[in-house]
Image 1 (cartoon, one colour):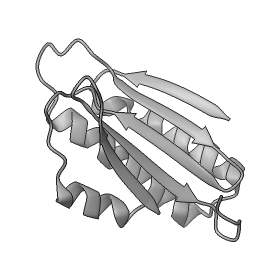
Image 2: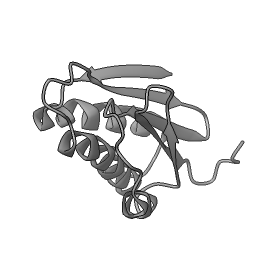
Image 3: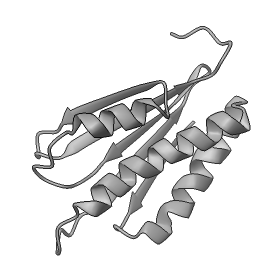
Length: 124
């Protein structure tokens, strides 16, 4: 299953992100504790962008959720140009999810991919 969200930089909209994560994670059978840490990781990635969002950016925060039999992947494209990848952000996110990657896009924005594996299912 795949879901896409486009958000203006409004922290009040994080409840929509949380609901999406919980529904998809619940469908995969992730325990409540894993759901909570995944929600925290996705929210942290979104807040990272919100904290550095330039006035008049005109873009939206793009989120893409992909659910597989063994994992849930969440891609956050922050829409903020020239925002450096901070080791501190990566370290914090790795405390919350199983895998994190930062990728600079051709547009100069950062794309963060968060992966949470389903315990007991072989990783592909």
